[in-house]
Length: 171
Image (cartoon, rainbow, N blue to C red; front, side):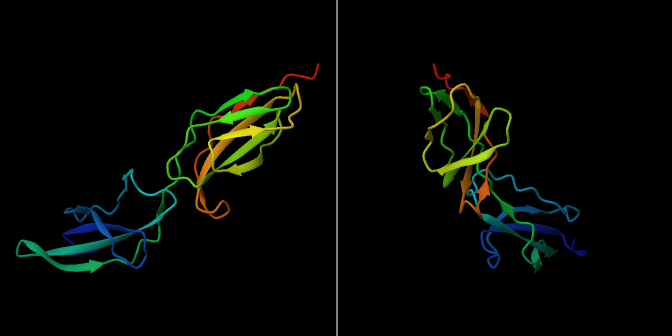
């Protein structure tokens, strides 16, 4: 908070060194928090915020003081994967399919047997996947999440709702 400020202007940028684009302003100097509710930001991009205080001089903006970039940046996460379906495709196979998620570079497929712990099965870029070599009569549960950027340093969306399939037991 700047003691003699008449208001603040909020800027957003994808670079720490660039002031960026004005996204909001406040003529009430007591306002010291801001929530960025923009829904069209790019998935996986770090956004930096600058706050510029101003003092009015003869009815117009006069002196301005620019803050350092706000260290709490916003990273837009991928949306949750929706409509995951799992169908048994024979005695030892299953077919997975889900709706695409905008802005992702790929998907992680996680699974568990019966009541075990989830393990990463694969990383893919398609919205369908065939799982082979399953054990008939065993329940398999799957969940999927999208990621943007590198799969080790990227950002991940929320997991889909889990779905299960139990291939038929061997006759």
